[in-house]
Image (cartoon, rainbow, N blue to C red; front, side, top):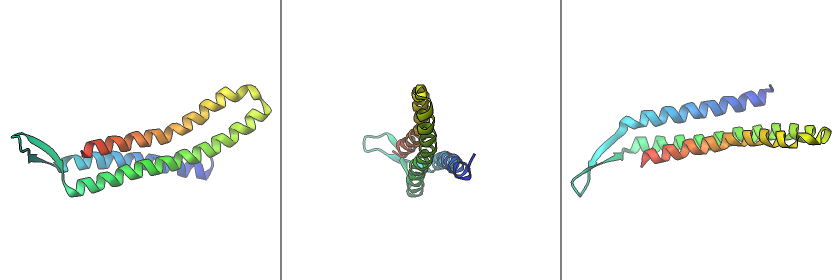
Length: 118
């Protein structure tokens, strides 16, 4: 595994852990505000909202960076393999799709964070 791949994996894992930590640490900062209709609604405080936006941005940005690096390496290897054995096309498309999934996971995490912020 090349050093660039290790860095991409480390950044992706760090982003996921940071987003998860900020999501759960921002949870206690939710305060109940009174609703004009008599009920109570959960409202986010200023610090929790700011950290939530930072977590969502990091989750999306760093997972996209990791996915880009993964697709670059897997795509180059896939092209080389397909030129030698054309019957590997289907398998290589699956591998490139798995590398693209990293960005989708980061986007899903950021959407979950933004939904939690309200």
